[in-house]
Image (cartoon, rainbow, N blue to C red):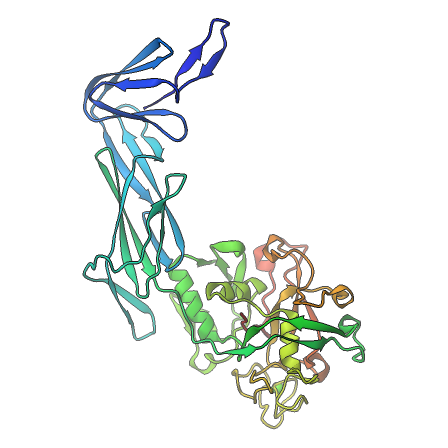
Length: 463
Ligand SMILES: [Ca+2]
């Protein structure tokens, strides 16, 4: 039970003195002041109990009858699946059951004694590449967890593990014990092939292309960055979806995989309706063998951004993308020699090496001089920036990022930039300087299903 003490002075004014008062309880009770400034008493036995409070020479008391009841201590989350390095909060909640009354729920802040034990698990991959984990023999001290209690009485743990572990968390409170299980995986890694681009400057835009949104050409200075050698493939995206699904970080509705955590929570990531040509979903993600190395498509911008976030990467900015495509040589196209032929890229038409009337597997054509593939044609690539046609007139010279709120996710309707043209594009749309504007969704329709997820849009990662 919880009590507060009120003192009333001679003029009739009352003030709360819970903290300042002296509290005494009979032997069947345990009592303390919570951080919330409430006196909290817990019963350890059945019977009549008394609580006394004294303040500036005045005393008051309360009698209570403790009946046979029951209490359980529950730790939340009851079970959680997390990645090493993530911070986790656990909360202890006591549920009290008394005959004839509704159960009472108490969020505990103080006096919970927390312990964290450790155990190892065996990891293996099954025939389909799914991760199987099994609890192994406990190995104390192998876990680099760092349990501590924050100012709200919550247990924070952080793990720096290199293999999966199961944390068993125990909370104890006045004879009650609660447990929670935390499955901790190592940080995910995918063998991303990233090309390092040293800091430097280049001329962004093209005054002679005939497209106003590429003007004025201007000098841009960029810091060091890295960019994906290839567009992200179906098999890479499926691996992400499987892991994210297993952790509850993604869910699916009738049409989309949706984000369940993070800044894009509730937003659609990837459409898997009949338009997804290569990824299907029945009880598990399946990618057709012939298309595992094709760039993933039918994504929203959020789907590209969340994939990047998941692996500690990001989308390249427009400026980074264009610098790579121009290869610091002012190339017109992001191809091996800066020209555009069907032996160098997949764009509209079929001829020479380009026997593709649709999207081609990544790396089907030679790399550009920086070692990056498929910058011209194949799939249009989402970039980090929001799009504004006149941005080049006001763009800062150092590390420019397109206009609009940095938190794109704050708005459901926005326009992103995309680069490089697609398998359906004519040559002009495949130029390194060409800027394409892509609406995130139909602004007249707030239904998430109205989000656009196009068949010939993809992305590559950066860092
Ligand atoms: Ca083609």
